[in-house]
Image (tube, rainbow, N blue to C red; front, side, top):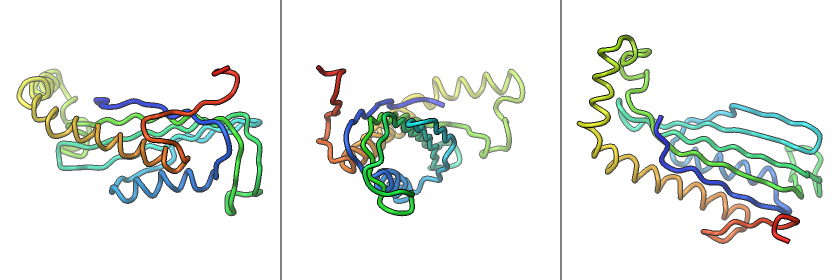
Length: 173
């Protein structure tokens, strides 16, 4: 998998947990991504959730997005379950990794290009020479714009200004 964009949002303050998660899920659904929660770890007043999403553009190319939430110092302000409004006061870091995958196993079946050394070499030549500029022009640039779009959408759902991160507390004096 090639990575196009990796960025983090840092936030401290009050936010609606359910609204934050549903903002990301609705953006992924609207952009025709298939997604799933790949990791969920909760301990004391700390929570980590990771979502993985992918969207096949054609038989050769697939967009990938990984969104990793890390909440800590969680204090419940309002709400007692995730079914209702659930306002938290916490520190939050959201890590985004936007990339793409080519020749994924859905094209010719499982591991077609990795079944022997010759096929691996053909795959590498195809990627690094023949399709190099096509990947850059058609997929990496659009992947970057895709990444900026979801990051800005999540900043908007937190009430942050575009292009800025907000981090309060002892780290900034």
